[in-house]
Image 1 (cartoon, helix red, strand yellow):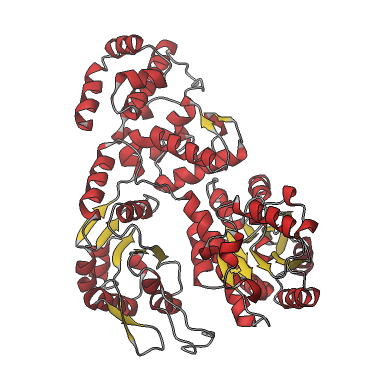
Image 2: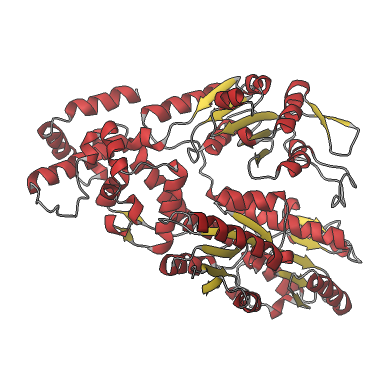
Length: 128
Length: 474
């Protein structure tokens, strides 16, 4: 059996985390290995859990998603990072790319956009 | 969720509730208060909010405290002022006009959506600007001195500059240094990363668009050329620009004018362009992905950024500058042991200064107030593990690569005296470089008397090296 795609969820909104988890539970090839409520926690958990993908909220207290993305990308063999933002325009996408994010999704169309990105990541990992 | 956290202060309960409903409907969880005294300000940071809507004020003295609290943070979120405050609000509240944005009532959805989108961009830009090193490149190595000379040479002419160099070498730092030294320094500095913006959006990003120009263009918008009027436009990753966009850019550079997308009015512009790319544009021309005529337009004054591996002697000064900057902006206080620095010195730095900067920031976050030893570094930075890198280093500085991490005993043992001497020499050399060859200052950095250091220099046969540093500095 092929291995599952391990994912860390990062968002400061418990409600958002719960509904995302409810959705991913029904996807057989996704394994939610953990969650973090801000960027600082995300750095520690990424190092500890070594997920293949981090789904990261853009704006959070303590440390936001862009700073956390930069710092996670400084670790050895960093994961694929997707920034999720309420605002989707050229400027927000540009900031995410500059921070080193591999993908960007709009929170208003989260599930649809995230699922297609994750399917791509899964495909590219299968070819390695 | 702070991007979705909007503070609404309005003593007019009906209006406050309506605004709250609009924001709720936009999924931007508002926090609605009739009076600021409900807020526990001492436990709050202005940055917790993306924007603050201000309407009728219930308690003047509590509101005064609130404003004081807000002004303490120069990068506080923008205030969206309801009509009562439009004309004199900024002055009355003691707020900077640039952070005081009028909001109409009844609420118009496109207006509030655009203001909040801009608040979010401002938040990201402020954070990024706080990170950007000021004052140009750090270090005293020959490549950096040469770089500084070129920046000074070109700054005051309005010529187009093309900055090339590997990713992370600090092309934007150089561009900002040119801008800060130019006569345009009081104008805006606008940066665009052409590679990060989808090709179909780039034209409207650069040149703006008129209302209705395409689906989604609900209002007209200025492009980055217009925003940079009278100042400098930094076009990063120009080598990633599509061929059709290259034609449009060439025209602006030649004619100093353009049209917004969907507009027919020609706009004149007075903007200095600094372009940058990590690609070899001459190769791109051969491959047919970059226009030769545009290349010659841009390549008026080329600057090539040195890779970090070609200026390793700057590493201690860079780490020093980075840790100081982090401490100053309250993002953690960290120091590196000499062994950690030696280990980093043997790494190849494919990501250059940006990689170093991210690493130091990561260390500051993970070891707040602490000292980082070689073994605390992520594994890829511990030199001897990565053999190809070691080879790379041998070519640059055999002295550094030959030595294992200072605190590890190799399997076959080592000559302790020689090993310690090696560490001592490297630190003395680093101190001399940081002190620009001034022995007295280097001695201070090492907590040695000047005479002791002179003696050590003689003992290690380094007196001549010291002279050399002095002459290159001069």
